[in-house]
Length: 293
Image 1: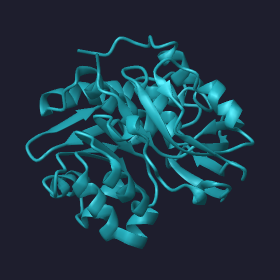
Image 2: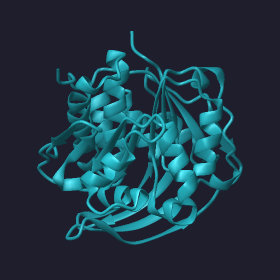
Image 3: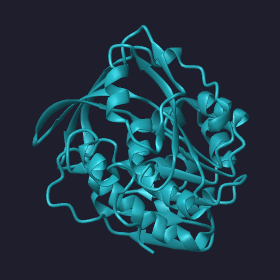
Image 4: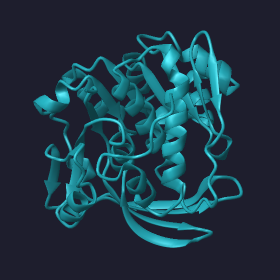
C-alpha cells in the first residue's frame, strides 16, 4: 500500500529548442510530475487540456498508476509554450506562448483527489492554488511557484507556502520570496512559516538541496551522459520526492534525504530526451527503478 497523490498542474504542448535540436512534445507540470510520481504511487491528475490533444495525452499517460478521469477537456486548443534553452547560463533564453484553454480551468476536486493524502500544487496562479487547498484534505502538501507570481502577488504566494509542508523553488525564487540574500538563509527563513517544514531548492546541473529549520541535505545531480532538454526537470524532481514519501507513507525529516535522491534520479530521466520519454522508460507499467533506501 501507499498514499495516493493528487497532482494539480498544467498539460501543455511544448515547442522546445535546445543545442541538441527542436521538438514539439506534450508536457506540462502535471505531466512531468505524474510520470515521475507514478514510479512510486497512484496519481490523480487534475488540470485542463484542449480537445486537440486530449486523446494523445490519454495514450501517453496510460499507466496503471495514473488516473486521468479528473482532467477537463475543453473545445479550445491546448496551451502551447515556445521556448529556447540557453545551456551556457541554464536559463530560458527566449519564450512565448499561445494561452489556449488554460484560463478556463476552475479547480473542482473529485473525491479521489480531495481525499488523497498527498497533494502537489504545480506552478500556477496562487489564487488557483489556494482554491485547491480549500478543497483538499491532504496530510502532506507540496507546492511550486514562479517569479512572475511572486512579483505580481507575493502575499498570495506566501499564503500558499504557509499552507504547504514542502516548497519546491529554484535558488533565485526562494531568495525573491523570502526577501533574503543567499538561498540557504532564504530557505531557512521560510521554514516554520505556517505549516511549512522544508524547502527543496532546485539547482539544475548543480543538483538540489532540502532545507529545514535544523538541517540541509545536499544532493548532486544524478549523472546523465547528455542533457537533451531540461524542460520539466523540476516537476519530475518534485514527483520523485513526494512519490517516495507517498510510497513509504511517511513524511518525517529522516526520509527527506532519500526522497531528494529519488527526485534527482527522476529529474535526470526527464532531461535525457525531449518530452517525457525518459520518464516513461523508468516508470514503465508500474515498475520503474528500485528507489534507494
